[in-house]
Image (cartoon, rainbow, N blue to C red; front, side, top):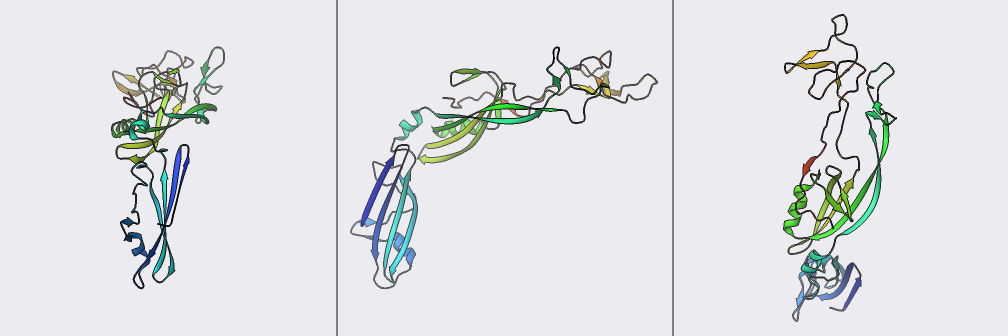
Length: 272
């Protein structure tokens, strides 16, 4: 080995080692990657930098031919853990950054005083209703986890919170937080760097369309709603939650509840 540099940059660390390799006569370049002499070996893929910096591992190995038998081998290392032990990493608090997203969603109720269903002047629902912007708060997490916690995150991925949870000291009600796991980077034998997002929507991640239709349930069976002349109505009629029609076509319809994401208890999901 002819040179070595090591750089600790706070949350990350990196290192470089350069080796000079001389063969007996002409040799293929890739043989330099497995060269050894006097007890010194060219490091292999994923080897550690040292016994005290086991998380600083080989990320790149490059061979440069100087002559038919003379090579320079450059080994690059990277350590995302700043040399901390796996126990220290897992015990550390999560890194949490906040950002915002704006989504446009269709809405079914007009927030006038009093609120009223979004319908045409003739009382019919729109084929495509109006939309409003909804601001979503996004919590961006970075957390070192063990295999068990990794499994908990994977099990809860793409679900909403079934119960109330606390994020950054504030209570978030059920169905308002959606977990989106980005991925995992293994940084130790039993340690993974997890990156995930929790998207908080104070209105909740539940769709509530108006219950309007041309059919009603009678004795548990769908039947067309007749107009005054006995034919089928030309516009949707407001329905009760149980599928029966309301008394008047001008009555306020009930809203249905649909879940775009499954609810999960989020057992073992790190929130702080």
